[in-house]
Image: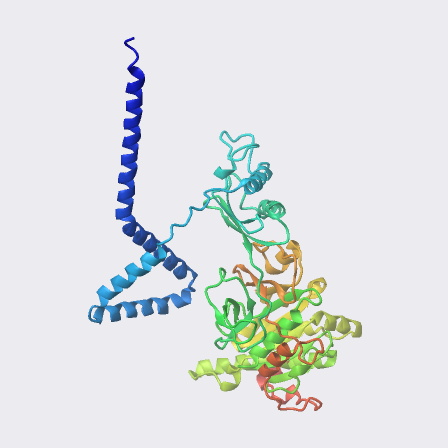
Amino acid sequence: MARRPLPRILSNGSAQIARSRELARTAADSATDVLHPLITITRGLRRLAGAGRRKWGDTPKDRRGPLLFLVASVVLVVALVPYGPLLAVIILMAAAAWHGRDQRPAEPTGPDESQTKRLQSLYEALVPYFSTAEDPAPLYTHGGEWDKAFPAYEFDDTGRVSRLVIHYPAYFTDGEADSRARIEQLLHAKSGRGREYHFAWDEEANELAVSVLPPLPTDIAAQRFVTAPGETVLGFTDPTDVQRTLPLTHGEEQRDVPPVVWRTGIRSTEPHLLVAGEPGSGTTTLLRSIALQALRYGDVLIVEGGGTGEYACLTGRDGVLAIECGLTGALASLEWAAHETERRLIAANRARQAGDPAPDDIKRPLWILLDRPSALGLLAGADGRQDPQSLLQAPLRHGRAANVTVVVADHFDCLDTLSDAVRQHTRARVVLGPASSSQLAAVLGVPPHTTPTPDVPPGRGYARLGSGPVHRLQVPATPDPYDDATTETHRRAVLDLLPTRTTPADADPAPLSANPVPAEVAVAEG
């Protein structure tokens, strides 16, 4: 009978506990109501600061100085205005309260089930390459934890990996090109084909960053680029590879794009260019684009081995010395170019010895463009005549000092017919069109850190200037304006860049030998 009051005691204790919880909840709600404006403003300030950091990171480096000056000027003006700082603080608090008014749901902290399966599949595929039986604590094991090997990852809208950071053991031979190539091929296959991947190896930190590259723009037409004398725009590349942008005046959208700029002249380290590609890859388009840019400041001599008339639009134009398609004319023009190079060297040497500035007639750049010289070499061999490439010795060896630039373009199957002088002195290289890794490495010297693109539009390829990095490249559309397949927009863009016609197209051009050869050169040649 003495145990009956126990249920009442328990019920009273439960009621007290429930009442205590309700009072605690009420106190917490009251504290939240009191602190709600402060929390809202703090959240808004944090979001404004994040937006400012993203804006600063997206701003190109060449524009950060003017932007910083503008912000400093605004702050100075506000500080000098009466009640300016107070009004600035009120406006800032109002903006923070507006941006922090909604409490956004927390983003998921990890991948979903399908993404986890993809990451686990990549991890299992890398186990045979990143593990060894002698490792006492292997990072990669079958059935292991992938989150320790992949510290960062991102997915696109389709659920495929768009960015991935991979840790690998220190004993992996990341210094060997074959070892890196096997890993890159595996990741390309497992992450999803049909996209172009970029691989950034950090040998010091034992990390590999894999990212998906967006396609390069193909709507950029030929135009007058904002460049200095001696600068030539070969094409356009990714914004992460270069620190310079150029404004566009033609195209679907007027914007700033990162260019691949090739510098020529006396202080250039890569004074000559070699372009390789398959038929229809855009090699002639690139040479036509270079010719239009070179005519702004210099003279151009064109030798076309294909004989298809791709440079007919330049016939008779101011600054175009000659356009030769036959073997006889090519030999005569290149012989004159060799004598002109030596004449410039002698004139520059005399002026330097006398302490005088260089004469004006040697300051104007001379460009020699050869499109498919291998075809002319075959004709010369059949007729028992001199190979036109043998006349490029002087322009290639002494062109930098004489302000003479040589550009050679040919097909992949004809690269073995190029002379040793062409191969040795053309340190700026461009490869256009579809090409294998071995072909890219043979021309550029090193393979690119990207996978081949699935669709190769005309003018798409890679460029490397000297010993620099390999850049993705998209040549600006510079078609033959006389071609019926050319669109009206591109035709008008090319025609607007052509110099005035000083000689009728059907008239015979003046012989290049009209420029006299110095006696010293004649004696040396004799």
